[in-house]
Length: 323
Image (tube, rainbow, N blue to C red; front, side, top):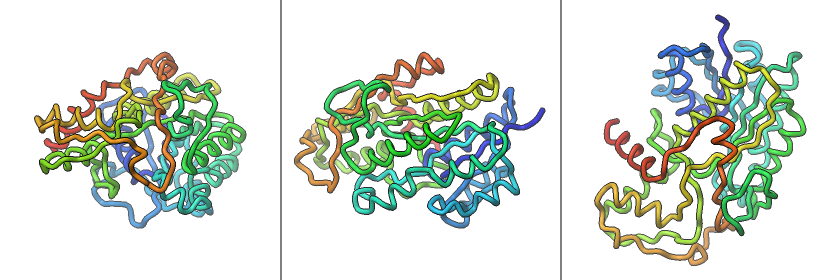
């Protein structure tokens, strides 16, 4: 059986690590396809804990701005069957501070140019976009609704979607909401949402949370399941794929409701949660108010139903406790 070549771009990030472990686990339990794994990283060297759990994977240092490093992948690994692009500058404030850098990283021009260098058109590009492409003046946005981003981060992601759809024959663009779940095998530096809420509420002091920003956070392992399902669909069916999917959880929640779910699971005093308006804090970047998403197309296309936010919190915190 020939192996399916998977390249995860941004493999040392939060989603990238969870994804690599899932592909490796699929190999271990035996699935219809065996995966050859490779991943890119920006920093050098890649973390040992990650290499220890996926020892057969090949790490490559790549500069996404210049494309330096992609040739080494061609020479050593070859043309991938599936590329999952998890790499991004995803902190909206950082994008506002340096828009040119955000555009250079978030629009995957060097990656797409490299894929175009192969003679055979056999690669599916799965690209992570964001719910922040939506304006936030409505609710439960559908994929066909107009993308009207209110900040630089959202604008770079819309530009990426357009670039991919114009330059790639086969792609799946996933508009993801907030991704939450257990910590990675090699801990990431960024603050994880559920763990942060848990930490501040555990101190027993009053904490402010926004009541008027609404999202559909997705449990990381549901997002991983979506990507694996797309991989299997591409390999088994071999049909042209040009997909745009909203990928959010099943619940529309505010930051207050997120904190309440953590407090309920932990048994914390819910009166510590103080509801405030997002307009009361200057974060140096405009943030859309309600970018909840309709995920009907996701459920119908891949037959995947994401867990409720309450269940996701339980799974996150029980997994953390067992690690």
